[in-house]
Image (cartoon, rainbow, N blue to C red; front, side, top):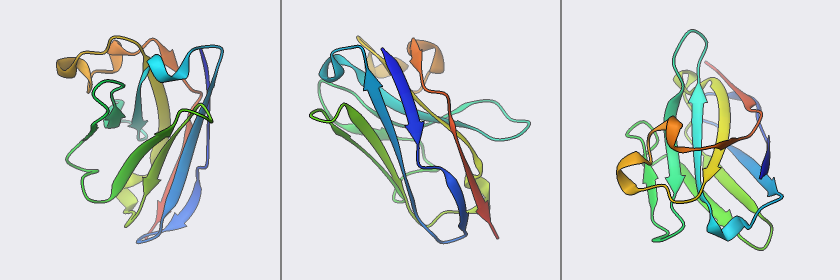
Length: 125
C-alpha cells in the first residue's frame, strides 16, 4: 500500500490543522492506521492510532484532548485533526499503516510496514 500525507503548514500557537493521509493499492479497511512525528534532533514518536478492530483511537499523552484521529474507509483516508497547537508540536508528521497490529505494539513504529512521506507542521510562538 502507498500512503500520501498532506495538510502540514505554518500555524500560530493555539491554532488548528488537519492532516490527511490517503492510501492506495491496498484494502484500506484492513489496516491499522497511525500518526507519528519527528522533531528536529529527536526520535520519531507515536502520536495517535486507530486500530481496525476494535476501532478505538489511542493517543500519546501529548495528544490527548487536543488531537483527534479518524478514518474514512470510503475515501481511503485517515485524518489527524490537531487543535490548541503548541511550538512543541513542530515536527514532520508521518502516517503509517499495517495489518495485524496488536494492542501492545500500537505505539511502536516498527509495528508498521507502510509509511507516508511526511508532512511538516511548524507552530510559531
